Image: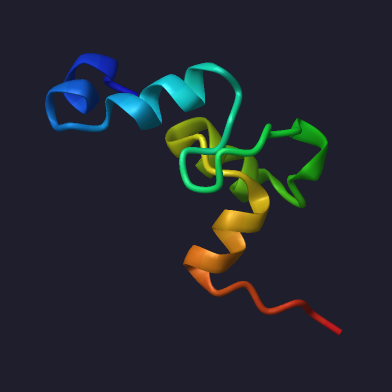
Length: 64
């Protein structure tokens, strides 16, 4: 993440949350053990978004 760019675009609060280990959407602490697969972990490393919020954003449908 380009911190300076994100701050310049008005996302300073979200950058601060990610740097504190919190999700920029729900503001809850992110636990690495919550990610179900490598794709989810990769998305977290890009955006800082927790698994629950990723599921909501991307419309996760559990497999039976």
